[in-house]
Length: 159
Image (cartoon, rainbow, N blue to C red):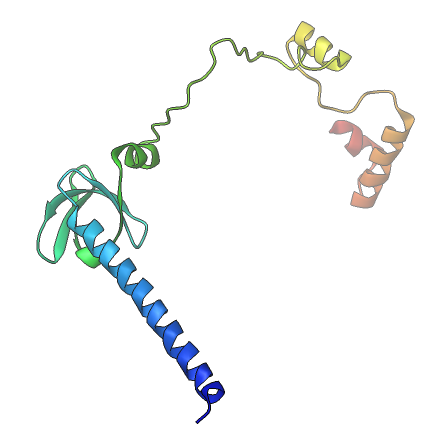
């Protein structure tokens, strides 16, 4: 046989060997990670549940999802063992982001924009969101809408 006819088979066997080798490495790393679990460690299950390890047995793990809520999971169901700072950041929302004390947030919009309506609103204490009175086009639209509803001028004015 010619070497060119055997070359595709050799490449295929080599690719299969490399894929199984990398899969075995991933399995060994996952098993090592699960063996490192100790009580008090934060974990994430493969279902996305964040919990604290309370007890580690041969094939199972006792997790505390909330104070007083204990769950038994198979060791294989643990997706990741988290570092303490990462677990606290995700579960408790403990961010190490420091805010700048010099940042000032204004109480009203007037200081952010040069709009005169905003300036008037701060003088009176409230903002008028209604239509401005005295515009003929707005009055005509209101009468047309009332006419479509079957209301007379007296009923529309009573509103």
